Length: 247
Image (cartoon, rainbow, N blue to C red; front, side, top):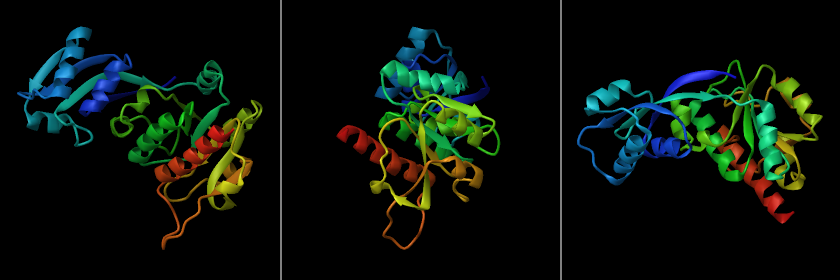
């Protein structure tokens, strides 16, 4: 398992961290702020025995990694990366066919955070990212996920293509987002499935794409020819949700 030190920034993100049981080591709050969410955070901090320091906006700006702290910054025990087996176990515990996201070298923390949020809301059991040439679980990722990072496991692997091969032995089929693929509405995306989303600039790498069983094209009618990685993940995720609901 790997660890990264980070701050949790923003009111909702800190509240969700407390609700999920995450250990908060210390808390910085804007001096004089007394609105509802901040009072909720104060109550949680008192309940958990978290040391609280009231500081100026300038001090919070100095500490902030995201620039969007909303008057609240928590220093948390580091996020722990899950193992791939933990994600499969999460599916087994729910009695559901595995639904995974595999991200091929996503480097933008906002995209990773948004995909974690979407994965959680769509009922995915976890996310797998490569150890190299990809963003990890940073403060910006945590904030952008809007608290979903506390509930959706993220595993890091050395080789994404090899991981796909191993997961196929578990009966999981893989579909990658690719403009040259079959329109997603024409594909059977039910059952155990892994969705592979490529990097912002290059898409899914050749070796990873070769391991996939299907390539899904998202219909586009505009003047540009590609979607943001997190938007593509959301569109494909909810086509899977639609097909699962239909049975």
